[in-house]
Image 1: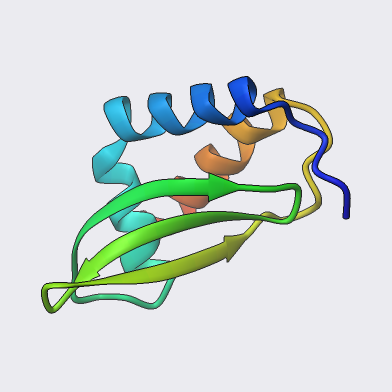
Image 2: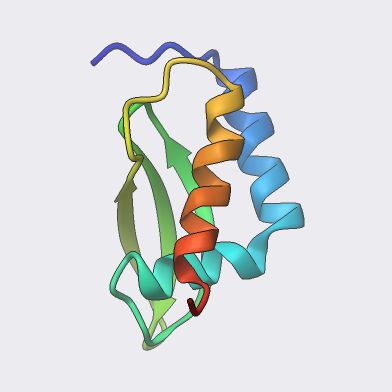
Length: 92
């Protein structure tokens, strides 16, 4: 799938998530990424099909790819997808 986002859009999303939502990213990686022992997580890439995090697990970096619920075609979808992911990490 062709990547529809310019580097500046990707960089803005990465910067926002890592600066403002680091705790949420860690929860997403621990629960949705099946890395319960992760101690840190950084969003390192994204594409139309998934978010890619680098998690620290047992002192080592581990790439964790978590798919979106559907392919992302416009920037506002990132917000709703990250909100959905975070919601899925919360106890029901």
